[in-house]
Length: 455
Ligand code: GDP
Ligand code: GDP
Image (cartoon, rainbow, N blue to C red; front, side, top):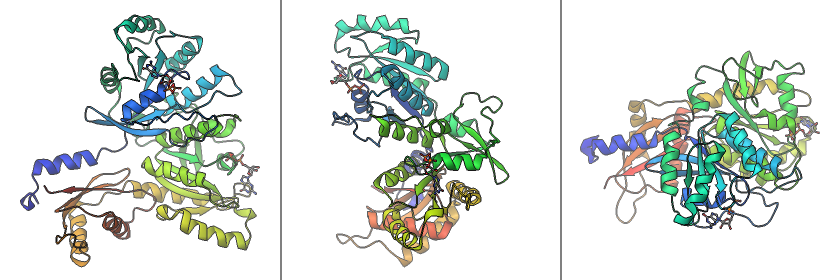
């Protein structure tokens, strides 16, 4: 392959870059107004502020990809929430809890010009309990004169405070170096320590679609549920559920069961919780209320799971209430509104009657199998060779870009790198993805395709 103009070292680097697998997660937590959103913007290199001034504005997006010193990771931004009826301490605690749960490392932001408050102390207690690596960010240190303020924060007992000006960028590089130092290479909680253990399932969906009912149904009344597996006391929010003769770990179920009703910011909590569950899971079961029209919110939740690179199952609930007309319209809606995930296995269930609930297991297993599929390089290239010969890329500007060879750089989800002689158009990439799916399955999994062009 190298004789086709690609330097073998370049090929190796491209494969390594594409095969990174799931990224570790950094959560940014702290009181309102300490500068979390400003800091997140700086970390992800975004210019416009994400801060919404209006209360109650839905912010679905809470995780972002970032890169520092050549390493990629995800950032969970908890800056978009509103203080609610629970009062400031409880609401700070709630958002921090969800974020910490999903994270592999935490950046705890304190306003150095204010100093440590009781609320900050409360977050420190949560951080201690969680036992995840913490980097203390003493924000709003805009110049050397603020350094003394930062030093006071040693009193929090979280080690060295890193003086930072999120607004101007001062000190953020040093702080990020520290974050990378403590951040594990891969999200250990999801993929490292649990190899061979129960598979992790996130049951997600907008409020009232029936998550809690379905969980109760599958877990049974008496609940074959143990909240503590030997040696993994860290995740009291997960439940082990026997289903189809196997044990599954339903992650972040506390939020489903507790059903905390919040006023302002409730949507934001829901998004944060969904993101946290998705990060921790291998497969997402997105529950959709089949009795109602598929909503933008349903689509966003599906997108969240896809963008996180998790295996996906679509479960349409409340099937007991559907008449023929609704069934007809639902099919049309699925074709148009969920076309981008036409590869996801689908089950039609009723949490109320138990209809087809047992079909969830084969669907989940199919999705996980697709997610872990690896295509041998020889087979892939035989396939690509035939594809390129029978359906060449359209000629553009007198040139015809050609795919020379490809390889699967990683799994969970499957990631491919293709090496080409010129720019490959989006339409042709989609065509390749479609054909890859036809040929190799990949049911229930997103797939990533990146293209390297020979210089
Ligand atoms: P959040 O609620 O924690 O997400 O805080 P924001 O990022 O919305 O910031 C709250 C306010 O603090 C905004 O007016 C920011 O411009 C300001 N701010 C954030 N970082 C800094 C900083 O490093 N220095 C100064 N002087 N102000 C900052
Ligand atoms: P969650 O907010 O997603 O956890 O939803 P819940 O489990 O609390 O369910 C919301 C409402 O839908 C409740 O009134 C449930 O009784 C009802 N519900 C849930 N599943 C079904 C179902 O399969 N059929 C019918 N008819 N109602 C359901």
